[in-house]
Length: 110
Length: 110
DNA sequence: ATCGTTAATCGTATATTTGCGATATATAAT
DNA sequence: ATTATATATCGCAAATATACGATTAACGAT
Image (cartoon, rainbow over all chains, first blue to last red; front, side, top):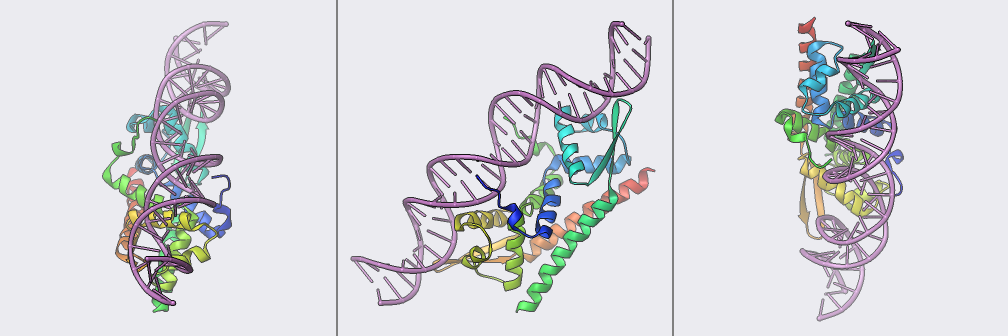
């Protein structure tokens, strides 16, 4: 690839794309579901539920955390995660706004 | 990786993840914007607008088409693309429904 | 029939993602 | 102090994604 071209697009496009990337793997959607159902904590619980190794789950959690969709803090020897509802809501609004903007632009052009 | 684990998740999770993946690159979001503004056709026009080579744009178009978000048909030597609003709407609804379901599950648990 | 234009595809290079086992670290329990 | 438990991180392998130039295919115009 040599050069990444992603930064040549608008910040908004990059931001939304990054959000979408965070939920672009079924495992990460599954993790969000588990976190929503149990409200908080877990990690080992997530590993028990998913068909993935502990290290892999840990990696997916890290990506969700980097994207800001979940928060996590250590609680003794274990890690407690929960959904960052504010960020999630923001993503939802952003995506919905893209959709509306596209429709609006389309309505105007013809 | 050796084995892909994606198919071990629910169809719904896979489907939504695939949709999200389609818009997980700023170039593809930019393409959707151009298509919305001009309603239809183009390809060379998209190449003119984006900071990417023709072959790269063609690849991104293919991915959007595979995801069902756009339709394309050849018109002489050129290709005419347009947004598949129905599919896009469906994705929007699906994503929104995930969000609502997560919130609902969360409200119930505590 | 030849030439020019447009866009898809092929081949290739590189980067990133996905996945796992092994290891390291941190804490709790004995 | 030792042991057990939980999780993050490292190192590696394989798969996918991103990007480009070159080629091919398909058509229109001359």
